[in-house]
Image (cartoon, rainbow, N blue to C red; front, side):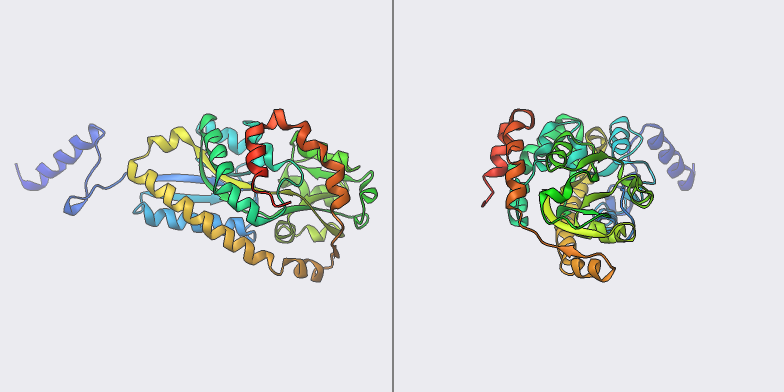
Length: 333
């Protein structure tokens, strides 16, 4: 039997047995997998740039054995559909907000509680410490694997009716919110009419007057061009907007040890990269919003904090005293 035939038969036997093939020099050649990452933002958002960085970094760290295809603009559905897809096996990764994960674990509602955090320093210390550990365990309990935390800044209210200078200015305004009970309660407590709506539908809802406004971090507002369909942005800073990239825990565990390590390392790398990237975008975004024709106003937040202060204690049993106490331990208020 000639050498070429012997090699061909050997490879066929290895493949039939489901064993890995090996490249020259004795190193193992991983079977290539393609991972779909669903996101709701457009290509101008720093999160998309971070997704792209993650794809390139993971390709490098996995030796090309993992290819990530990023799908922005809600191409693969909204966040809720993405989470369902990850658990059912029709999607590998999705980027979502903490509020959207609260339907799986109420502990994620820590970021739906108003004014729990008041600075990025507090937030990052909490995510890199006790709060992050609790959330990672909660994800694992529900069948998810954390890839990375994404910074998105603090959410503030914009609308097409009037600037918000006091709580009274919010009365009667239909404000789009994430479909999260505590977020809804908070906005309603401030006198507005909280209106849950999918993120991908928000631009047209503002344009058509279905809602009067919404609440977004400044960078997200600018990159999604909401200034085209709204008029006033008021810095209420009522929620910190944590986003997360998650994947199926079962899918992750089926990968080789080398591929798992590559995902872990690429996840850490993109988390660090995205924090800096988002921070850089925040430096001059208010000026860009104003230059686009939308006035931005600061306001006294003390009355807002007082008005919603009871919401934290009211929801302590529901969210979990452990994570609330952990979060408040980082607070310098």
